[in-house]
Image (cartoon, rainbow, N blue to C red):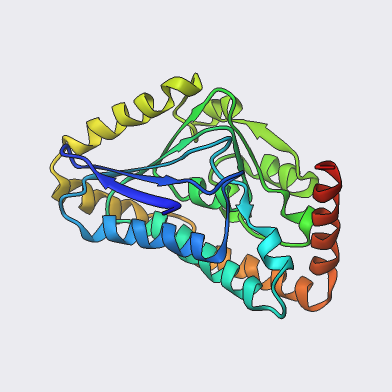
Length: 252
């Protein structure tokens, strides 16, 4: 199964995404991540979640190939609903979610990480929201939780990426470590949280969400509306076809 969930004896639940070659998630893949987090939320034996990935990078966003190979708008609507469900599941998980980010974290990956409670990253990790290149909008809500407003706007308009090590200064990334130490670093923080009374930590998670100045669910849903407009106008399909063609040519 591409997304697995393992509860350890110490109360740490490890959810792993493994969708070769680049962890670009299909529609079902996003719903699978949401389901794993919802399961963790409902399980009182789960004290904390570590969300991680196998492979070259943490997450490359939506599987554009699936979208371009599906007639009509089913894949588009599915991807939007799936991303919404996954991001919401991270944010509303009853226990803290630690994102352990390796390599690239792009598009929907930023949606997952931006809604997490704690972020640790490998020293080669980087973040970006290249949505404008593919005629879509989204995850600005979540990038704004990782970098200051003007930085977020620059990254969004230019589709540039930013190294994880640069986010440490903003406090959004706790630390960066060599990739072979990433899991250990995430488990160290998770262990500290897991050792607390989960009833108190769950109450704390709910309280912190309650005082959050931004309603991330509504904010992201607002962004998605513009994605649908661009798709109805034909802009998104044109740009996705260009992206798919460029990627195919690069492999020759």
